[in-house]
Length: 344
Image (cartoon, rainbow, N blue to C red; front, side, top):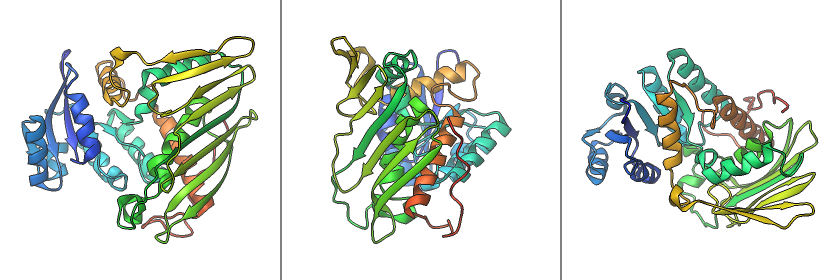
């Protein structure tokens, strides 16, 4: 790594890897130097597509490449523990896609590994790095709507997805919660921290994954959070934060908003819009820029996406799965998914 350039490796070649790499190569201080897949042909095709000089047919070769400053892990989340762990153990810094892992046990293992080796590790929760979401959080933290009373957020896709689709495949950690529900849960915890109590209900598929899930989160402060996710119905992907003195509404796409509206008692509504200079609303470049800022600063985690916050979200996801009865292969039916919840 130089003062001018951070060298990236890309681990996996699927859709999200392509989207991230396309945004990454537009950043003047980023250089993509290698890509790896379990298939050498897939890695070479990806490398040719983006002009990447090295293509590896196995993950270990990428992890051992000392010319790489940081690896972006974009495998299915069932492989995040193995892929990110391999890179951290080899001395690479890691940006790992969300959901961070399959469960909090795996997440805690990665965090411990990163801290043991003194490596940077961050969940690719791009929502937390979005400039407009950061503006919303700043307003809430500064008391613009008073004390937060409720948070509501939803994310649903219409489908239908056949049983063979990855979103319904237990072997790939399928279901609405981990793929989509991670966003509403992360949004609520961005503003309120880890809940002290959780109730949840779900509709399960024949394969045993959740087709849609609703959860009620509560905090010692008296705040409540209502979150919903679905792979059988398209939702507005809206969010609302209500406080003792006002409300903030994100009418659509809360995790990559183009605007939100602040309502304060006794005042006209105020609309906040995305700055065109920040790029397209679905850009992943902000999380990449945060990783590179942190690496240059010598930080081993990001204050925008702290590892303790990632672990807290994983505990909530585990608790919701425990309530609705979703287990994945390798998790025994009687395994305790509910690590002690820490009141916020």
